[in-house]
Length: 300
Image 1 (cartoon, rainbow, N blue to C red):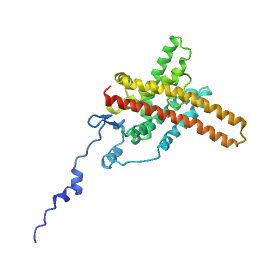
Image 2 (cartoon, rainbow, N blue to C red):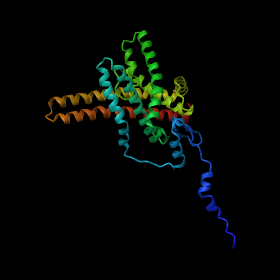
Image 3 (cartoon, rainbow, N blue to C red):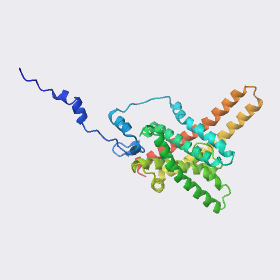
Image 4 (tube, rainbow, N blue to C red):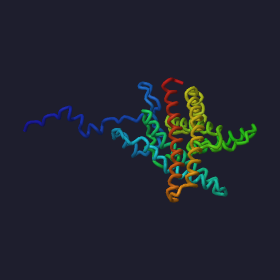
């Protein structure tokens, strides 16, 4: 019986055994690829489940397209929850503090979702969407208590300096999506958003460790572009506040004079509130993402 001919090399290299023995390429954990000046964010990579890592390693990347404005809707459920908790907190009482914490966590979760969309819109890559809800929740808690310390310290310092509206600085996280109470507070929320973004970026770089002071140092090193982004974002927040107030006045007049049903009036007010909330959060991340990208590309 003649010997079985050897399997051609082209077939052997594509065989199941060859595919199993072929080493897998680990996912890169870079924010900026210096070779191609690409903008990457693979955040909190170590916290992904083993099954998810294996799936990401064996499955090719697939491009997903969607109508641009619809991408903002991914953050809407968290923003609705944050708005509900804000209403409860304004009522005061024993539930006010838990409601504020839940509202801030919801804003951070909406921040994660919008950050992913913003980075991809800027031509970069993001794996924020691959994190499970539990992993996102843990990351938001790690960021929340650190940012809360910063806001408390800033509020106490401003009060000691005689700033009468210092307590508005405690709404720094809230102001990333909802309108702040004062113009200084709007610039303050822009800076807080920049620090939160840098904390997310450094979390993937440092193996998932959230570091507040490292993020502040990163902001100082990239102050030329990030500082400009914060100033521009603060000015945009001020303009949005005037625009929101004008629309609110128009809707109030509509409520008083229109013969539309109560459902229609409520629907209009709902769309008004969350259109500005999603717009503010989207603009926040678009401006900061572009500023951070330029700091990497331009080197400062």
